Length: 383
Image (cartoon, rainbow, N blue to C red; front, side):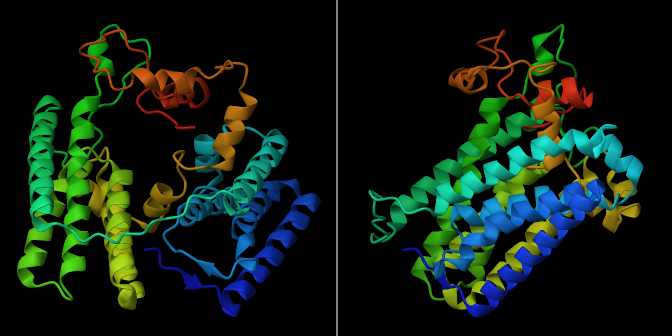
């Protein structure tokens, strides 16, 4: 059953004020082109929140919440940092701008904003033949829950142990680090492309079992007892082990988002408390993993700073950043040629293990974009 909150006057006033601020930034950019990024970032977010002036009720955990979150962190905040050269002009140029002037990003920014307009319209415009949601009317079967959770956990634990063994374990002294980097695109041995994809997919059964168990307990009991929390903690550790070991920060974030969503739909009376607890824990672990990535844990914690946290959350090439998108747009068709759907069709062979298909091409385009545009050789830049 979907639970929606009412869009009140405070939210509408906040949206109007944000729209006015975005318009002011656009005017500033017309006078000073160096403010292009700030104006485009604010404009993108203002487009995403505009529907709140028209709708009356909203589901906090509908997909649009995560679209807005991605735009806010990956575009708006990043663009503000670029316009004000924070933390430094050298870092911004080396990471995102690559020596290009604001004029280089003007045309792609228009395409970017148009895409946000179309995405927003596509999500909020009414659909005549919308399939109704049947809701969740059936109760959990405790025996089925037990069987599903047990099987998922056993498979996930076996896959996690195998993945740790194949990737060297903790012998390097790094407790959370990228384990399957692609060292170069021109590899002489296919072993350098081995990502152990099947094992990584099987380990994702553990987060599923955690969310199923969490939802079952919240639906069955009015309050959870210490034994329930102990069982949940054990299942959570299994679900958390693989993402933490391989420094898969996004998987950890989605695990906490899933837990927040389960609590939201089951315990609406404690919505903001549950949201605050899950969010604080998720952000804390995300920042910790960012400090530990590719560095000795002791040194990383001693040298940790707020700037490092912002770099990990905002100033990266993983989200829907305007600077990254502009670089890709302006590098097509040279040196990046048109793919004519190849990057979509190639996913048909993704389930085939590389051990069976040694010549399997790269599925993700991130390594190619990272090499051709950003000059990276050990990590990709996802489009």
